[in-house]
Length: 409
Image (cartoon, rainbow, N blue to C red; front, side, top):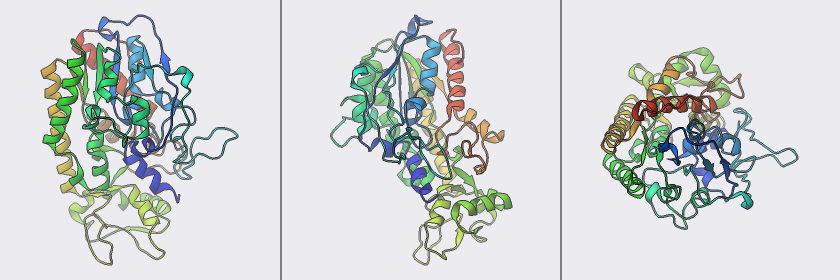
């Protein structure tokens, strides 16, 4: 429990922390029969941690194989090589929410958030089909890869930009899921002023698509919308804490009795979204500090962050939702203008939440699926089951756009 704060913060960065550690990997190649359609002769996937296969605060070969991109390539019957990370990973994924233990090899010391295993050079291939890198923003796919770049960026892309690495595969089809990190960290932290402005996002995104298509004339593909941050299960409605069962579970995480502030959490304040990490922050407060959840900013006692950091009040939620909707309207327009398909995963992900498949508050009696079967243990990244749903949806979108006959995984 004492490490809960650090791990969840790592999750909020969509893999940026993982990328900070020096590690290498072997490249796994999946060779299938002839593609089902000529447009799938060479498929590349550009993106960030979700596309790369990051789950539960870590990444390894097992989670990489569960990416929707791998499933989609299998449906296409096309080659798909990815930068496989040796077990147990870099860093190894968490396998228990409460203890924060991580995947560990038998006979080896217990894995931590800094554990990183290396690539096997003998199996490295210079041409990758999954060029996604955890932690990237809309700026990064075409940005020069300099000495300050993360270790995973260097190792996955070999000093090239993401677009350059994708073009090495001479792609005939591409999926692009870029932009989640432009809003995820700012959204879950409550510091939405740090999100990428719409005009900057549009400029960045336009360059990515322009350079990709310029290097692969005739390219087909799908542009994927940015996920709405308020819908990730890590963000808990303040109103949920009015439930005694939820309050008891929250107190267990916080290590002291938790209560809602009767002033800031009254009325519309109950519509605020509280990052699950807020409870870990309470746990780290000095002994005797009250376990109060504030739903909007207050000041006093030197605690000026209360109700601001790790909280989205209704106004902030509306602003963030509007910004992401602006991103997605641009992505849809860009897809239309270049003749690509467009896929918005938000109705799918929101439906899981409204149906109850994703709990309002983590089920602490389950050490393996506290956020339900569709989200991994970090409360942000989709699980293997969700990747299947995403791949299924992409198959439908691709078939409808291009008249193909892909079969769902």
